Image 1: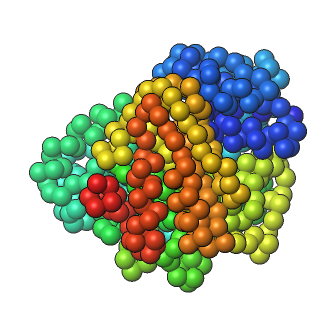
Image 2: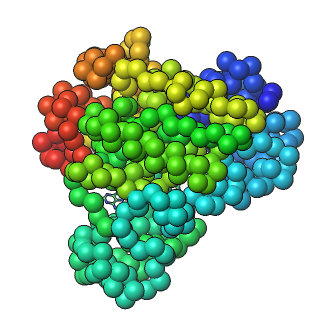
Length: 446
Ligand code: ADP
Ligand code: ADP
Ligand code: MG
């Protein structure tokens, strides 16, 4: 591979460029009118305007993106995360144009891309799934019967949902009647798919996910788990690896289940199997993300591997660089997603980033979307940057994080950095014994 077009924006585009430069692969970036001054546009070897700021008029214009790739002589498309990354039609179109898609084959995305189909596929593979409806639900009456059978509280979820969008916690039949029809309408509007289904709500739960990788030669491996239980609005804010709270036995079992899932679907390239775990360390399949995950850096830090490089090699038909027994972990890493948002109410805070400075440290990486002077627009996820720290153990990594956050300065927009400064010193967080309701405690959020 000599030239890759990155069908994405922001920090993930910069991250892909970083590896391409090391591999002496040229990069083509695309940008919308809102993004022309962003760091990734300057970092790429070539960059082209793709359209207006709304995603439907730029980053989702599959045909325009592929036309550009062909015209500019790209060999492959890296989709990053979000946008077109889990769109099997886009994968097919990419291949029809004679380009390599850096990700799994479209057939695998079809099996795992929507949550209803993925749940069925995983049940066939013998992986425990969250108790729930095994199919998309058509009417509110049907939903009521199923919810009764599962037992409230239940989660009503969009089959095509992602990024924490498209799910609602329901305590009673009244709740269900209030939201069912609008949930379907919203799912259609957001994800182009009005399928919804029900799941048992697992209380006091933790989100544990496993990084997996497959190649064209029948190999599938895991790169250990990540703990992602610090969330707001069902979206991750802090992720760490390894999980601070699971037993060695659970680690073996959950990583084993993820590899079994990967082998069952003939998985290729990078993927993540997400599980929800109850207080007894019983875990259930939630969904699979058939792409590079936002929080892949924490896995890279504890394994000393470059997952983007692995993605490019796997897409190029190479054998995975390491076998399972050669993949080792060492130390501890945490990622903090720095958002332009109110740190108490979690409402986006777009605006001009008048100041953005941060310290330089060994074992600290900042993957940024924006730099000082950029305008943070309301069109995309308001992620300013990801701060990722490494330490020889969790305590050392947390000390480093604490030092970092004392020296991060952001002006012009609100950010959640003040919240991170508190969390890294909080006894509950430091103990590692937290679950997905952690940020609902008023004590820490303030
Ligand atoms: P991860 O699962 O990698 O931790 P998130 O769930 O936070 O990441 O989502 C990754 C990015 O992709 C976010 O910018 C999110 O808004 C976006 N995203 C994920 N799924 C969808 C989807 N189905 N539709 C639109 N955007 C999505
Ligand atoms: P998305 O596609 O938006 O990432 P997920 O199905 O992965 O959606 O769920 C995101 C988060 O929502 C989980 O990490 C968890 O905190 C919460 N969640 C989802 N399903 C359940 C459930 N059945 N019980 C409890 N919490 C859940
Ligand atoms: Mg998820």
